[in-house]
Amino acid sequence: MNEIGKTTLWFAGIAAALATVSACAPDGPEHIKNALYDTGAQGKSDADARLPAWIPDDATAITEAIRTTGSERILRYTPGRSELPANCAKGSASATPATLSADWWPAGQERRTDVVCDSAWYVVADQGAIYAYRPETIRQR
Image 1 (cartoon, helix red, strand yellow):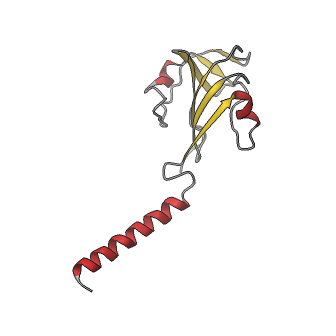
Image 2 (cartoon, rainbow, N blue to C red; image 1 turned 120 degrees about the vertical axis):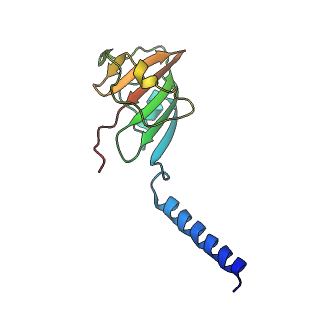
Image 3 (cartoon, helix red, strand yellow; image 1 turned 90 degrees about the vertical axis):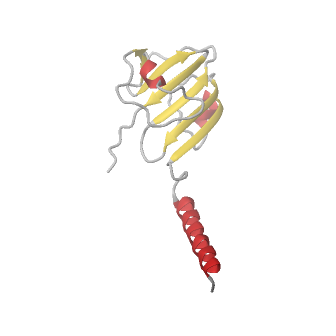
């Protein structure tokens, strides 16, 4: 086999190995799952849904990024007529910076939060949308 054939064979082997690794990794190499829901009610009743209970059922256009190897999450939705429930109260911004990012998540948004829901979610209303951040609580090894 000539050098070009060996090089081609080598690259083909590497590509096959990388494809196998990516296929085995849950939700891709970044371990992030993205979810979209039309309404809060749908996002809480879907068999695979993980939306927190504090999101109003009439919230719409919900998009969420979920770290599948931990607990960190970011989400955005358009509020309906319902207010945030009583288990959401004024609070300080998160001291833990977000490591998740998305094109719909403004950089540093977690530092602008002013409401805390369920003692775990940091929430802020911004330009007609609600943004929420849940910091990582699982210790990585």
